[in-house]
Every structure is written in structure tokens, then in C-alpha cells.
Image (cartoon, rainbow, N blue to C red; front, side, top):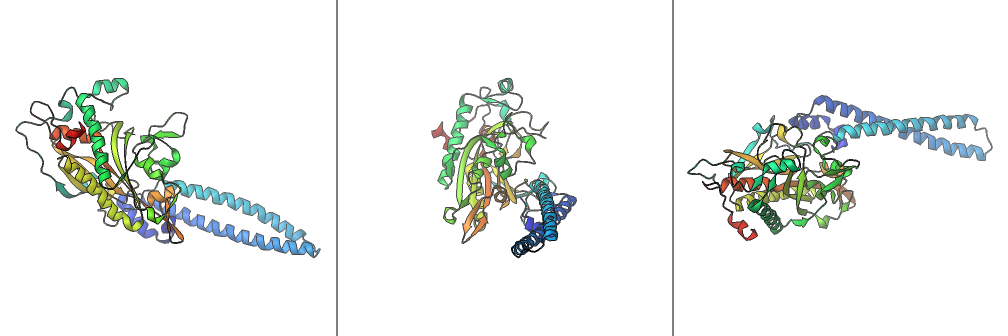
Length: 412
């Protein structure tokens, strides 16, 4: 949620920052106008209430002195109706402002580059050399015919579902356990959370109201399947005031994730790159504002080092404003090399949302005698399915079989 005080006090700075995310200036102008109208209405109501309180005291004095109060009573009655009317108008303005503000994205950091889309992201570095083959590498769906069953996935549900079999199912389980163990070794406490959350949880982390079309809703309930465990893990602390000694809180969580993939028609229709249900191990951190940049680097290193330990070449990309997510102030993507596609593909995103989610979720910590909003960060430790795909393609043999990375052998 945007800081409405910043909207009122420094609109030009806010406008310039959000133009990086290509937010329409007219939206912000309307937001500013509504905010100023609300401020004026609140001041008017406070003046009416002050006047009503003063006249009420005078009314009591006149009654005790047995003086005529008919004129003052008429004024009090009229003022009472006016206060009720203004209070209703104030509530309606607050609701309108809240609705617009809830659909307005977070402010990007100053060092986020300008850009329209993913083509304008900036490569920060490459990690590991991409492998060479003495044969033409295949894409993952053409390898190990007894590993992935796409047809039965469709039979059980619909397109963009798949079934893992035999060693692929074991490899998936091995990856989950290895990732969680790796993250625990880096100081992230493991948690296990529900895969179903309520509307308040999805509002707090920014999926609602703007991205409802991408969620699977449970019929007849105000409940949804989670799109990522970032949602329930961050919401563990919703409406709480934490002690400063608790921070930073660093958590890791495995979960299945469910997304309708609205707007992705025609993209990655083959294989396991873009599924309606997929597994992911997540990193979530709750920090003091002054800690969040350092923790961001820790989370990014954790995910990158995990890929390195698996022997998977990858690169770091700083996202431009046009490709930055709704709630993110800063994001670095990790893209893994897929030899079958001869290109890098996203496998992790690490984001700092600053106090954007915390303001929506009302997560604070006791800062001396003041309650201060925390910073929240999230990142894919790695998407499990895409990691499995990357292993299949990078560790493939000419006969279509797949080798297992050394660090996973004890998990198999």
C-alpha cells in the first residue's frame, strides 16, 4: 500500500518514481485529488465536532441557569445531522481512496533502471560456464520417456498439468529436501503452512484485488489456493507488533503453488516450464528497514549458491521498472541455462518490497516507544519443477538418459 502521507506531501517525487512502472499519471492525479478532498473533509468534520462540543457545554450551562435554549438546541440538532452527513461522506471517500491505493503499485528504488519490459533488464553477472555437448541437446520433454507423463496430467485435470514418474518423482523429492536443508544451513528457519488462505492474506501481500484472475478460488468460500508460499509465510505476522530482538526473521518453506496463468495463452505450451500446479521452495524475511538491503543480498546469494552447488549455469538480472512486479521495490531474477532451448530461463526472483506489504498487512515492530513498519522480502529459493528441467537438460546424455548431480545422490 502506498504511503498516503507521501502522496499528499511529495506528489511530484511519487509521480516520477511510479512512471518507471508506467503507471498512468491520470491515475495518480485522481489519487492525489481524492486524498486532498479527504483531508479537507476530515478537517471540516473535526471543526464541526469541535463546535458541537463547545455548544453542548454551553447548552448544559444554560439549562442549569434555567435560560432559554430553544435556539441553541435547534443549532445543535442541525449540526448533529451535518456531522452525520459529513461522517458518511468521509467514510465513502476513505473507501474510494483505499480502493485506488490498493491497486497502485509499489515505488521502485532509485537505482532501478528505466525500461519497458524484460528486454530492458540489466545483466549483472553470469555464474558457471554453459556446458558443451558433442551432440545436439534435447529439450526436457524429449528426454527419459518414463519420467514425465503429460497426457495423463491432462486426463486427470487439464492442460498445463503433468505427472512425474519413477526417478523423476524421486528427483523432485530429493530437490525439495536438498533445498530446505541448504536454506536451513544459511540460517533460514523451516516452516510448513496451509495451501489455502483467506482474502485478507492475499490482500496483505498484494495479490488482491488486482490479480484475482490468476487465483484459484474455492467455490462458496472466501478462500483461495496459494499462488506461492510467500503469501501464508508473510501473513504469519499480519496484524502483529514484533519485538526488535526478533528481527530479522528469516524463513524457508516448501509448498505446492497454484496459478491460472491468466494472460499466458500460447506461451510455453509444451513441457513443464509453465504449469497450473508446481512446487517451489520459498525464502521470506521480515526485517528492520536498515537491515533489508543486507538480507536481500543474503537471500540472493543463497539462491545463487544453491544453483551453483547443483552445477547449473545461471545469470543475475536486475529488473527494469517496466518488468518489476506490483509489490516490488527492487528485484533480481536468476535465470538458469537450458541447453535444449539454448537460452536462459527464469528460475528464481528475489524481491525487496520495503514497507509496501507491511503497510497492507500491518506488520510492525517496537522501535523505542514507536511502532514502525517492517520491511518484507521474498524470493524463490528455487522453483522445483524448473530446477528438475534444468538438471535434465544440463545433465543429459546422448542416449536421452540423465545423470544426477553429486549433491543429490544421497537424497536419491
